[in-house]
Structure formats: C-alpha cells, structure tokens
Length: 199
Image (cartoon, rainbow, N blue to C red; front, side, top):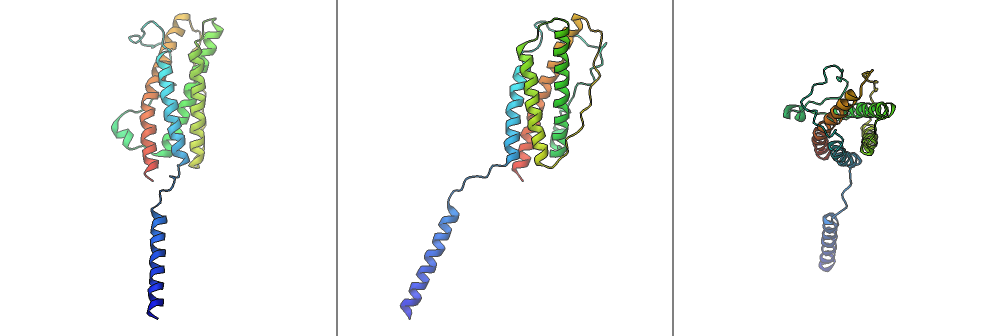
C-alpha cells in the first residue's frame, strides 16, 4: 500500500513539474494588428517627411507671407506636451485621416495647377501624393479595426487666378506645412502605439 502511495505521489509530482515546464516555454508573441498598422504608419510618415524636405523651391520663401491667399484650409496640428498626453485613439486617428486626405487634395490641386500652367512637376511631388494615399489607407484600416466610422472629407476652397510667382510661393508653403505636420504626427503615432501596446 505504501509503495502504491509513493508511486502515485511521484506521478502527481512529475505531472506538476511537466505542467510547470509547459507554462514556462517561450511562446510567440501575438502581434496586435492595430500596433502593426501604427508601426507602418510611422514608417510611411517618416518617409513622407524626407520627401517633403526636397520639394521646396530652390529659392528661400520662408520670410514671405502668403497674405493674399486663404490657406487656412491647410491642416494644422496642436504641438504641445499637454495636447500629446491628452490624445485619444479614435479621435486622433479620425483627425489624422481627415488631415491626410486634405493634404492630398492640396498636393493634387498643386500638381494640376502646375500642369495647366505648363510648369514642371517634380517626380517627388507625385511620390508625395502616393505616400499620402498610402497613409490615409492605413489610417482607414486602423479606424475600421477600432470600429470607428470614417469622417466625411470636405473639399477645400483653393485660390484662383494664379500667377507663376503665386504657384512658386504655394509650392513652398504646402510642402513646408506638410513636413512639419509629418514630424509631429510621427510623435503622435508613436504615443498612440505605446497606448495600444499597454492595453
């Protein structure tokens, strides 16, 4: 009887050790699809930022104000530490999607204006509009993953009766603002990804 009990205890102990061994095995980390999309967006945003730095005109227009044009339609972003810490995932992604679509509309419009005025269009400008399209698609997918409705996009009011000088100024202004937007948006996406990873 004692031998039987010793055998039973030994078997139970072995089963317990085997269970602990199974639990201690390293298992592949389950990647969060949303984290993966946010990571791709960060990479795309950085690439877009580099592209825009090469889009500006060779001449420096940084000291010139475009007072005669209503460029309020260009997206702007709050860029304070307080704003960054108060970001919510659904609101931030919705705003980002709206802004990316707006920037794409502006860049597409600028390309059309340059073509209509027989001005050269840089291949990098075409790359920028593709990059904006890719980013907005990734953002759209991320919004669907969190069951958020895509926001409605309104068509901006663009200036008319442009001269060649006007187009040169706008060709500086739009990439300049987009570059700054990409720089800050990268920080926003990294912050949002850290929030998602912490869930």
